[in-house]
Length: 296
Ligand code: COA
Ligand code: MG
Image (cartoon, rainbow, N blue to C red; front, side, top):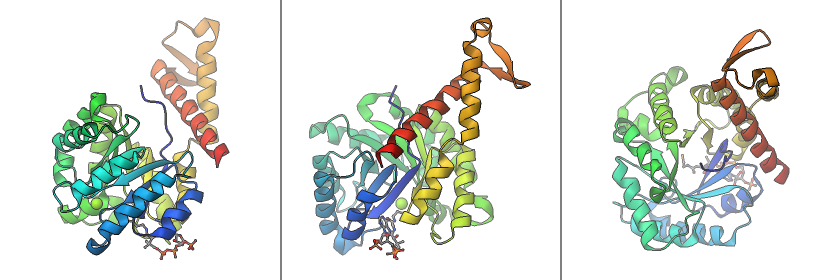
């Protein structure tokens, strides 16, 4: 199994924006997406590609995961983008506008053909109606390590545009797509990151949406502005209460009289072995978060 990796806060930055690429080296986001796609104007595409490759090669991003988002292969820039991204060997390449499993398999084949090290994984943008319809099929390619797929990223702005739904009422229209894609991700052992919150000056609304994403099972949220990093890291980390409860479950199951039991009582509540699995994950992710935070 892949090592546990905190992906609470995943910050996008336009590849053409020097200041953002530089500033990102000091931001406490768990992952950074250096974008060549929709946040870069057509006339700035070539320049952005060069800047992003240079920034990744220069490094200095420490323990943050660095991800490059190229344009789709069908576009005029797609092939040059993915080859340039591959040459920089980031932690991952985020495939945009995925429609079918074949889009991931094709990207994986390109990476293999140019001998990109295995540490460079693929993430998939889930942002087209086709991707939601084929979520299980897309996630399933992650079962074969050759395909490098480890993470799905919700593209809610594109989904709203394509579906003509509205972003209102606690994302009433979006929630079913999020929930379905969470299940697809979990069915094949992938991580999944929620979409962005556009109104970046509204911290109250942002926090509410983070809570909603976490409740749905998201591992984290994609972000557009540095001010969103701290609240996001807080909300997507296990709370002290959750950690204490998890440790209690682990310790109680470890007691000699419980070692062979399938179900026990802790603080008056029924606890099964499935809760033990959950508890171990909570403690492991809390440990991984502590490591990354100690590093910052
Ligand atoms: N990543 C890194 N740094 C960022 C950033 C980002 N996404 N967004 C803003 N910053 C930096 C700015 O460069 C500025 O730095 P400085 O003050 O140290 O020079 C600081 O944070 C404050 O920025 P602010 O003035 O509040 O924002 P802005 O008006 O410059 O930019 C946006 C607002 C929305 C245009 C900008 O945040 C952005 O481009 N976000 C990402 C958009 C994106 O990538 N979209 C694609 C996926 S949906
Ligand atoms: Mg998009």
